[in-house]
Length: 278
Image (tube, rainbow, N blue to C red; front, side, top):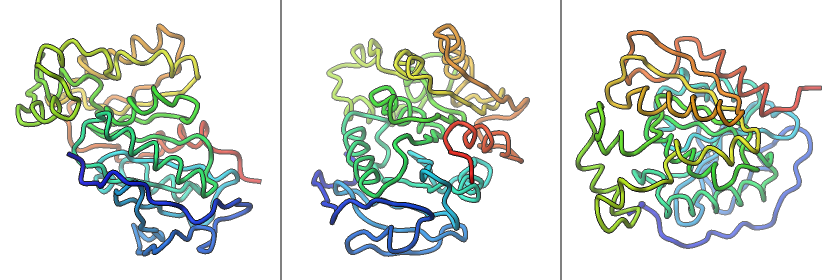
């Protein structure tokens, strides 16, 4: 189960933010702060889960923000997080553990989003889904398409039958597959395999909301194979009229995530999730 206590941590008053963010704007009850890649990070608790927000040195109008749903400390420079901070985005994370975008995790995400809204961040988030984080990002986005500005998937899991299920060409992970079934509450493996709530299945709400997608994938990925994941999303999303860009890395496997120069991803997100600077 997620390393969280299912309780709600109350916010001491909603804030109305105007101009650049300041330390006073971002105070939470009993918060602590540290530095994250040279930026000030606020550490607090939401819904019984550890959470944090990194503030840019100068926030853009409207206070756009990016949200890495899993593995927030992996490949941060290659996967756009620091580039977005430099471009005036806040960057956030809530710790729900290895929960595969399961229903309990999504409820923690709901509480986290409400907390951030009370502190004046933009209505729509730029979601970042690394690897299994693709399950987290797409499943929450499909339930909340009006709250999502853009989704960036990096070698993202888009069908848990592929990973951790290992039902096609990928290696899979038997221990994760067993744990996923427990977290989702499936009564049998057959029920898990018949599930129609994977990212590949739930794209229509995102297309109707005109949520743009960008994926970065390694064409030699044998953990989360492109044909079983991103390629299906791309074909189905474009058939629905959605905007999607896929950046391919020939000869690269599941690692390293991101790009040597993440500028194309940063620009894609900034152009779709941020108001221009005055």
